[in-house]
Image 1: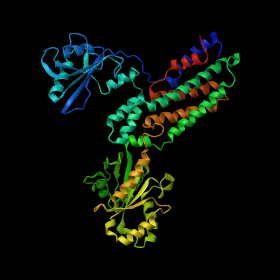
Image 2: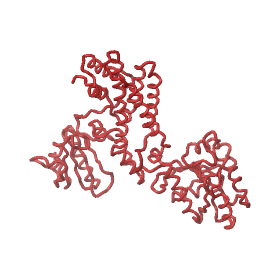
Image 3: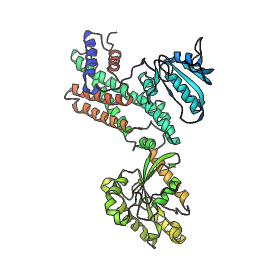
Image 4: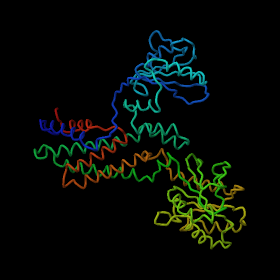
Length: 502
């Protein structure tokens, strides 16, 4: 602990001013804890179309007035979060619009942090339109803009940016794995991880700033900078480990990019139709995209045609697609394989060299991003197929090979098992281990945070002010992920850890 002095107060104020003046602090999105918007907004919060029940949400300072006028409440409002069956009427014409449930949410104990009301009405289009028109006729009440309820929740401190993104992912989730990952992020687990890193960086910054101002007065305990060095190294290691996730969370959120490649008439269209379970006509397309789901994992498929007469024109485009793909299914016509099974491996090696980019691009025949699909297996004699399978089983230098007949579905189950296993490995388990990095935005800011921490090490023994700026930059980038960082929080740590003003 440090003794109290005017110099310590001066340092705290200096830290606050420095942080605010720093270019790295500009552009931060810092929510306030209590936002009182002058306008009251409303919108249909349930899905559009005919349904049994529709929910209309109202949020803002006039919500209580809206609820009284629309539900005919002349006495007290209903208890918060208690459903009440009421006649819902037009506040001007007094015409009955519907009979439904109304709920009252007193701020700050609501989704937006403001006074809010909900009308649970019948889901017919005419009923919904009538209720929305009646709300729009009230003075000081307007339709909400897209995402405005969530924006108000963020500004009220009810949700962090990572939780907001998790909510958006949950709304758009199409698979079980996406739902689980979105729920975990919306629950705040990812945000808490980043907040913990931010808190530790604030401590480091506060200690470095105090050392800069008071080391000459011998008011700082010995070893403070050594503790900062250790903390910064530990944080750098944790962030880098978080970044080395092979984009599993991002793949799960946006879908695994799967490219189907092969020669003309190898069966690429048939394979895509089999996977997507439809009869999409793709013969005239350069590529087509679909959304098959493998064992609850999302995938995006791209079909690549390479007719001989156009192969050289399309080689660059095809290689780029394969290089950017998470998984490439190389389709081979089984009837074109050499009759001698011992020659098949060399044949496939040569074939893959025409489909895959150069080894310098990180793609090789043995890459775990490639699967071989030996199509038209029903046209190959069974004895030859079995001998070939034996030769190719765990063959070094070749990716896994699956015999398949798209016309008879022979071998389809075995192929899907291998494919599902590979896709699941690419996406990972959203419920195990540390929370996944899900957004490209997060990755960019985390990478910049690591670079900023490198600046601390670079200038640690030369210029502590520049070293401190590196920590400040790292903190700023973490704050841009969560939307919650401010100079006052650093000031709080200086006050607490160094007993200023006690």
